[in-house]
Amino acid sequence: MPLIIPDDIDHYTTAGEEIFCRFLRTVAKPDDRYIVWYSPDINDSEPDFILYNPDVGLIVFEVKDWTIDQIREVNPKTFKVRFGFKEESRTNPHEQARGYVHNLMECLRSDGRLVNKDGFAQGKPKIPISHGVVFPNINSYEYKERFTHDGIIPLAKILFFDDLDPHSELCERLTGDKASTKNRIKTTTILLLKMPLRRSCRSRSATTLFWLMKGRIFPTRCCR
Image (spheres, rainbow, N blue to C red):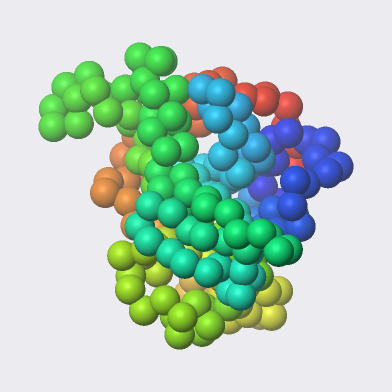
């Protein structure tokens, strides 16, 4: 399994977060090219997950355990969600993840070695950063049937129940018999398609970036 930080997760905030972590443990291969942070402290904010791979960069994931029936109203900024007999207004999880990306960028900028010094990317982190939303209790069909407007959350930025299921096409292509062939579709390719980035960090020293970044994101305990 990939590098998991921290190494002593004995309780997840939600069942959906546990499901998503199990998904990452299964498909994030080869193991030595992935780090997964769970609920890290990023400038006093706590994104659910941050995934790192030198071919992909950093991806911030916000996990929501909501069912499709709980979601009553949506707009680009907020979701009205029903909890029991009460409806509450919550930040659009896509916007929530975007806010975590901003905090993460500021965190990386605090270490000058992780920032480009010149060129068109001057002042920006050397590691590309993207974000996505995970709905472990909503399948893609019912979501698309209910919400046809891609402006609420871009579909390319969402992982659904049917993506995370161990018997899904995605998991089978990554862990089944086809996974051992030279033509298998690797996790990095899937993530690049689902969470496209503006630039790649492949040309940079992945090992150097790995250790520099690892020291900037808390906590630092880890295991495999």
